[in-house]
Length: 189
Length: 189
DNA sequence: GATATCTATATCGGCTTGATATATGACGGG
DNA sequence: CCCGTCATATATCAAGCCGATATAGATATC
Image (cartoon, rainbow over all chains, first blue to last red):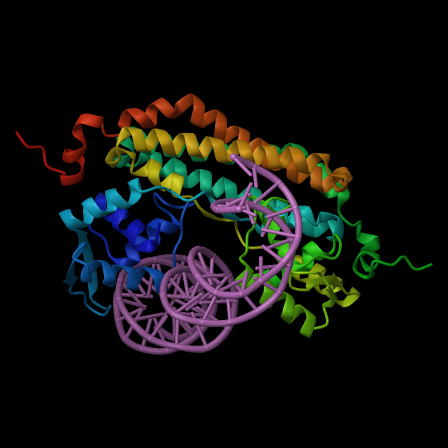
């Protein structure tokens, strides 16, 4: 599924600008499951407009650049549904935290502890975003409540495990008085 | 963290070729938390060799191209540890399944059901890979057991939720006799 | 015996990211 | 009250990365 399709999907919920779509990836409905940069979003919207899948209306603003508000056409809507029905790719994950855990035996204990704290905080922030999403009127839809619950159970499972097993990871890290040994890989007399 | 660093990390466990590193991303220690294509791995290894972070030894083979086996130098090892200690980026996830759930109210029920089945199967396969990893002698390390357990609780939480709440999602999908309505967005008499 | 999969490296077009540029209003701290 | 930072809003670009493809014999499956 390419970014054009995902942008078209967001527009089924109502018109939006490129900037607003970026915010939806960061804080909104899609936070934690998808992301894209401006360098992808703006060209995607331009191409969607060329293909007749969206309409573009320029909203004048004082000081700022004109806000280009995009809205999905019936053709674009049908095309989105067809694309999403064609099949989905497996989840793609890139977790630097998981990599750090795999190499915890090479890292100073303080670094590992800080990374665990950081990871727990990020997951808590993600949970808070889900709480906000639940208050949104659009979450009256059963499938959105499903998606929120799905995110919640996975985040809670991760936080619980991190809090109850972090001792394991910290124990395998390099003690503060031994860091030079870890880097060189050689124990000096 | 760039791919060079991740490749260097894998080489702390022993020498490997580019092809073997790719397999580790797919089935081994890093499956489910990282991935990279040949188009990234081979140039990364070449640059690591130029920088003196790895050594390259060509192993002759009959029929196939020579196998280029890379091994980490002490300098490369120290550099890897320094890079990994510099900080980590938040997890990046791209889940087409999650997107499909968000738009379940636009998709035929059969499509949603198939996607849920597919997602459960992928998670079960990931669990099976973790079981294999646990049998590996390297998992004697406490931190690797931590990583395996961490993956397991998240996958189990996801599977449990999908199995017990899938009815919610299927109920919000488009019934088989109403698909034309969903695509056009208009109800005809 | 045919067909597919595995091993193994390499290249390349096109897409994506992350940083940067531009311009202005708002908000809060010192 | 000034100054830095943040938010709004679009756009560009180098550098990096992905997915597909090429090559080619060996091994497995049917």
